[in-house]
Image (cartoon, rainbow, N blue to C red; front, side, top):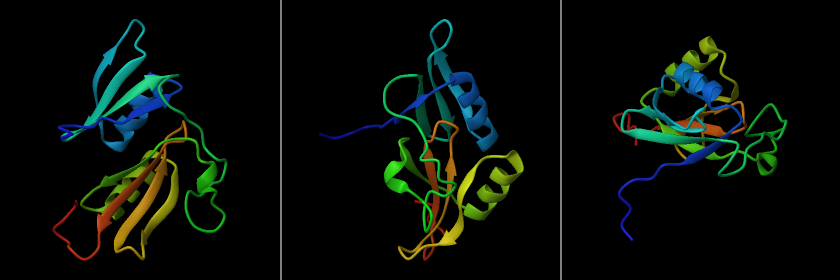
Length: 140
């Protein structure tokens, strides 16, 4: 099998609220389907994530304020986890704080040679926002 493209599908409670959350993050609504809409997509550059209202996968947070480190409960997170590779993790962090987006792990230089932070979607989906440390010109 040779995959040409992959689109994760997130189960969301309210597709319009999810469009708004992603817009605060800097993504744009790509399209919506249904009357009223119950399926759609958000886009950032060449990346696209599908959103499905109350279907296609699980959702839900563990209730822990952190998604990593002491006090976290990674095994009980029910939402999808995805890694987003960016040019500047700290700039994304500042933007998320300014927009009121839940940050569940601050920018940290990790042992696996990645600077990483986590944010959580209202339905519990966790985004690991990352950048390789050694190669400053590679956002992956």
